[in-house]
Image (cartoon, rainbow over the protein chains, first blue to last red):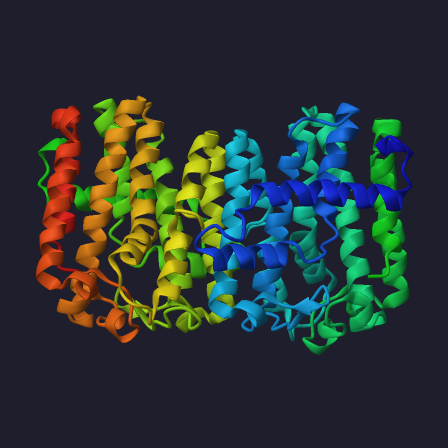
Amino acid sequence: MTLAELSLKEYLVEQTKLIDQELDRLVPAEDVAPSTIHKAMRYSLFAGGKRIRPILCLEAARSIAGHDVEGAVTVACPLELIHTYSLIHDDLPALDNDDLRRGRPTSHKVFGEAMAILAGDSLLTFAFEVLGRLGNARLVAELASASGTVRGMIAGQVHDIEGENQAPTAELLDQIHRAKTGALLRCSLRLGAIHAGATEDQLASISAYGEHIGLAFQIVDDILDVTQTSEELGKTAGKDAEQHKITFPAVYGLDASQHMAEEQRGLAHAALEQFGGSARRLHELADLIVDRNS
Amino acid sequence: MTLAELSLKEYLVEQTKLIDQELDRLVPAEDVAPSTIHKAMRYSLFAGGKRIRPILCLEAARSIAGHDVEGAVTVACPLELIHTYSLIHDDLPALDNDDLRRGRPTSHKVFGEAMAILAGDSLLTFAFEVLGRLGNARLVAELASASGTVRGMIAGQVHDIEGENQAPTAELLDQIHRAKTGALLRCSLRLGAIHAGATEDQLASISAYGEHIGLAFQIVDDILDVTQTSEELGKTAGKDAEQHKITFPAVYGLDASQHMAEEQRGLAHAALEQFGGSARRLHELADLIVDRNS
């Protein structure tokens, strides 16, 4: 059976396997000295993550090229390394102080705070080692910018921390989420598209799709934090309200938030028009992001 | 007066100014939102560091090319960004728990632990953004590897943490310091040399010089921690013994350590033979590293 013939569920299992194999190939084995740090990196990296960023990267490349692009799975892996580093550092006592992540104890609960800080640093550093070895410096600059302090992931985290106990305004919410989740999701798609040789016009469409699903992703995340239990989520639910985080439900209410997610879904589909059938999985992934319940 | 005519002291002042200007140009200004993170990055970055790594990078480029190489000062800056990130994270309560660095309160004492963790992450990320924008992916891979977990800086930190309260063996000491300080110093020289178009033979000599001064640097650092006061060092003295760190004086004693530093100095000078007069400052820097008292 070809990839195209698989159901979405089967396809996701296949793609997750593909990415996990490549991550396993890239990241130093647990017995490479000093082994504690490699154990800690792998503990968080192989904790059942959904690999949504690498999968988006692979599909962006396929949408552009119309087929699998050599090396795309390697390009995809640093996105998961960056995402995982951000989770480890976010969970630290000084930040969100979370004991539970994907249903398992967080890195600092298992390895101690010092090693969790270093494990995050290591995954971040290794992401750039992988991209550097591939030889395309533009991908490095794109990933660093999307992870960075101006309009990237760290900007979002800082806005988020500073936003606690501030009045939840629409403007602040937009700043937080465009940076915190949106930048890396958008970057996931851009890396795949650039690697596949996208034209500027194609890259713009792929980026627009990325922005819309990024916003949808965050809106749904905020909604689930209110409506689901910790067990359903595999992480502590209700933390946003407890920490007075600025979320979509807090600013707009649940109903309007749901409506906004639907609107972003529609815009995401529309952004893919020029790619026709080769963007089929990106269409399905947009739906998956909005319709998920964990 | 040309750079060559300056005394070593004047030369170091000039070079520090050059690098500080470039860092200031590269790093987002304090008023760029979110401003807290840019303040925290700049607080630690402009804290009177001696810029030894960027200067080594510049001089390696000059040794190869025989003159100033365009863009070398930009290549040099990520080395200081990485070094500064490592200091911020090293000083955290979960790691070395240091309140004082270069005579000033450490990042987490001023900005809080959450922001100090993020400031380190930011400097690390930004280092790769700068190198990525320059367009040479090999430099990215070299810097990431030298900062990483296998034979790089993080490997050294992990060996260091795990070595506390272990028997101080020569083998463990070698592992720690080759990785912890040596890898990044060696990399500083390699980035400059690669940027200047070094042949493999030239790169090997520059790397050998880097290994010898790296080892000398760490031996002297360990000696100073025993022989100097906190005031003289601008950081807490005597921490190594207090934390039962594996140091050169702990393994070999003070006299033998001093002798080893001298030996490395000699090997460093010898490694520069093929570069003749264009490596004059590298010779002077080797002497400076061994003869410093802070």
